[in-house]
Length: 286
Image (cartoon, rainbow, N blue to C red; front, side, top):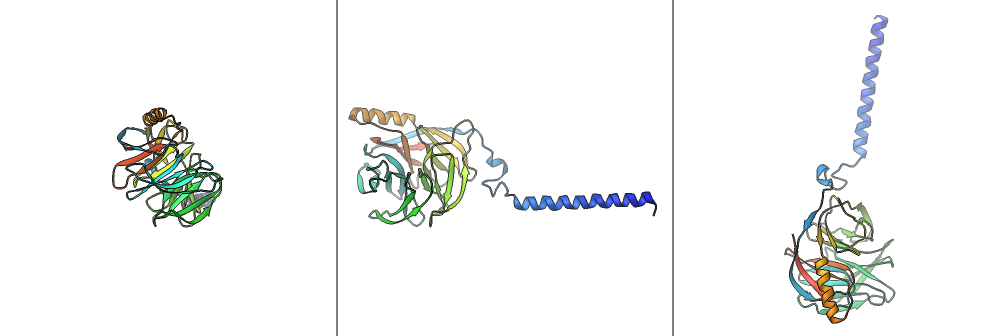
């Protein structure tokens, strides 16, 4: 073999080796890097787009305890449960969803501040506290305390999704997934939104298809795709707050911000209210 032929053969072998190395590296990278689907959705579907402007239709107005600083609402079949906040006034209560009457209640310790509320697959109520870093388990029948979980950070909103996983907010733009058995962290997503803010996430609700979140100090109710952690729709509840404020003014009582949403099981309706609101509203959102 001539010198030039040997040189050509060596170059060809070198190119082949480099190509094989590149294939191996790319293969290893693809195995170590989670796909778009495993990271919370697949490809194009998870690219945030401008959220839909949702319309709120009031079906009926229901009396609501104006002394309830509402933090969490959840329904179990046709029963409504509410968590209220503020030190010295925090409670867990069962409320008649038709009349607003408080049917049963239990108080938290005077130094605790109640927050979000969820129901697990096995029927336990889980209630957050704000700064106390503890969540309580309750039996909805009799409101007997069953146990507690410790966690780090602030507790704001809480709900359970289709597979039973708990989703929690802490006042930021994060959605934290937690195990309903021991409250351990399973993962976390940072909510994305085109053309608006995602911080101050507060009360949460799961309706079987979408996640809903109040934004603290606003009248915004966000509809969220939980797989992609993107806002797909925004409902403006300011007209409800204005109506509640007018009722409160006639009664000589104050109100605070919009907060609280519970899906009415088996329907297309929701119960929404606010802190110290004298009214709870049954609404359709489209």
